[in-house]
Image (cartoon, rainbow, N blue to C red; front, side, top):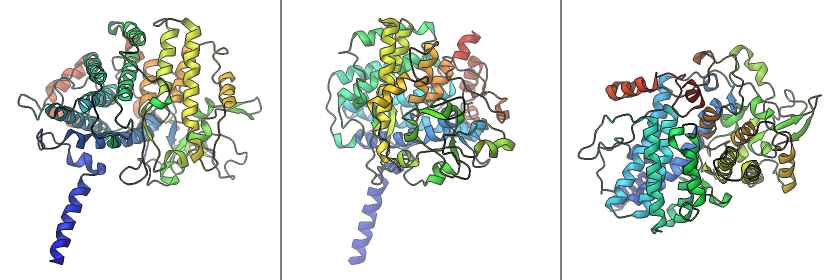
Amino acid sequence: MNKLKIIIATIVFALINNACTSDFEEINTNPNTTNVGQIQATGMFEPLLYNGAKFWQNYTWYWNNELIQFTAFTGGTTRQEHRYFISDANWQSVWNAYARYGNNVTHMYDLSIEQGDRSLEAIALTLKVLYMSNLTDMFGDVPYSEAFTARKANGTTKPVFDTQQEVYEQMFEDLKAANNIYAEAPVFVKPSLDGMYNGSMEQWQKFNNSLYLRLLMRVSGRAEMNVATKILEVLNNPTSYPIFSSNNDNATVVFSGIDPYRSQFSDYNEGSFTSSGRKLTEQLIKMTVVTDINGNETFVDPRLPIIGKKNPNVSVNPDNVWKGTISGVSEQDQNDADRGSAWLNAAVLARAEAPGTFMDYAEVQFILAEAALKGWIPGGEAVAKTYYETAIRASVEKWAERGQFSEVPVVVSNEDIDNLLASELASWDLATNKDELIGNQKYLALFWVGMEAYHEYRRTGYPELTIGNGTVFNDYTLPTRFAYPTTTLATNAVNSEAAISHMGGNTMKTPIWWSKQAIQEN
């Protein structure tokens, strides 16, 4: 009997353990093995949220930071993303990751309708757009209208690739549909599952509409998308389209630090996270540190010592200064470039409780600053300046809350923020090119927010990056997109080839539809 009890207890434990968020991708990736109605929509929500936040943390560290010159891996040649050495296996991994989340959230949407859960129906639409917008922004034309329909009676395993314009139009409709459901104030049945908003439909609605603004701005260079009218509609109807109004609304997932609710890098040490590989770059340092003609540091952006850490090795950094390595540096020049370079602040960024952010209030304010400067919303340059300065203040305040976790706690005062706004780094009045100023500061504010800085750079061309002499793998060209992987080409040949023909190629130099490069070439 005792042996039988032990066996039964072991089986029960195994079943419970398989329900943990850490196994979500493994147990629910095949749409043909799980039928609608077998599980509850609420059972899918928590893994989608928490694993999605970990996914965001990982991609900002692994891909975004290396591509957009926040960091460069200089611990050898095992990782060369900052040199644009990116293979088909990488393309496949990124494609599969975003598609997996898109598939799972679509499954949750189907379940929520089947089970009459209006709150999760709306959340599923918001999360679907969040994940799928990144898939299309990384690859261009992708399946959307027919994607993830294999489990349905009339579905397909070979979906058509919608043009990127069509994808965006469909995403906008999904966000509007979600907004309408949130307005009904449906009840979120288990608030404890929601580590971002505790089941608040009001805050989910704000996130949904702020995401709408992000994507409107993404395609703002395309006149046919009528973006100015749509942004104005949102601002003129705050009751119908509430958006982020403070950092309290940030789409940030909070981790408790207790397994499985631990951040992506909770098991990393400082070496594996940064000091043995990923260093801060001179691009980031020059945009956050002011020096005099003698090279002495006269001002430092208060965010820098929170997100970064000076190299503590006195033999390579005897003057205790902020120094960055060179993104895209050649192998032969790597050691010299790397000597004394600053690290990511592991004490802040790699904590087990370190939050994962999908979007924040600062980004919304930067969007409105750009819209006002371009005359899409009323107020002109004066209003644009107000939005801009509010954006920087919100960004610094967000990071200031995390300064307490640094090895030497960092305290940021209002005076520090005022000094940043008056400095040559961020002063509105001193800047001759306000578009560039907004672009540069938005770039910094998007640090550690998924792939957003990479997306925004391709849209605006800001900041001005220096391409390293070791980026020979893509002909000294920062990747404009990721190429469709060979598996996708083989398994959905007709539709993928049609997409390639429409876009004009399938390389990392093929511009995507909304990018500044594509618009200028037209």
